[in-house]
Length: 283
Ligand code: UTP
Image 1 (cartoon, rainbow, N blue to C red):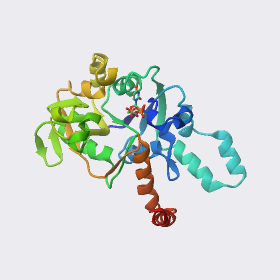
Image 2: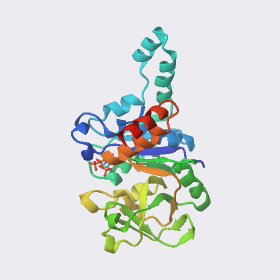
Image 3: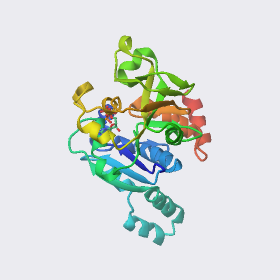
Image 4: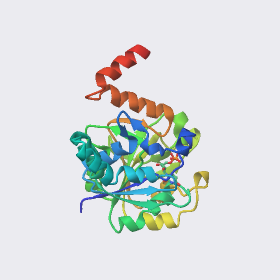
């Protein structure tokens, strides 16, 4: 059965962007002319995802509004003959079927995924972290779904990181069954560099079976006192890691967001020339 559902946890406080995130969800910060969140939803849709579950929280109403229809605005644009803008406004609202569920307490990424259980049901599904934006010829979600179709079980996206930074990521280890594919035997959340079993870190894309929900329910709080998705994943009987191809940006911190903005703006069909000229001037 094709995988058609994606869960996007966006409930986090985004403290690295405070004070901005007092008022603006970080998922709506722009890369050129679109919010970060739209890039990852477009990636999912390009890989065949039709249904998106956003796990939101207090103060994230603007995220819900962004992907909703806006009848009054649409009527105003139509009456003014601004049809190109009207098309854009409608396009965003029809990217995917979007439903929102709330996480009432920040109990960690694993808990946020568990909050989506009723909206997902008894099917394999994808989890996408909106902080991880990847510019790739084949969408990373599509790369993972290809591995999932071949191997079954869970699949996570992997990326090599410098050893001194393993304490920031979930790290996987196991035999490489192909140059870009690991049969995962161990997963450790944020290991100290000396204890890390490898330098392949999980990037925010997962294909998961619905059995993950029961595991999440019985996973005790781990690193940082939060229910960690990695800890539940480590208890799954079968998981593969796929070392994806593509340019990855961590937009959850200001420098990573700036890098993504430079990457996409200098390649943008409309603003690219202006962006490159600006880079040259400020370079
Ligand atoms: P982060 O660890 O990046 O936390 O969460 P954050 O709140 O987004 O940002 P900082 O670290 O305070 O700056 C990783 C992902 O998990 C989601 C976040 O929204 C983000 O997409 N998350 C995290 C939840 O949905 N709920 C949680 O309880 C924790």
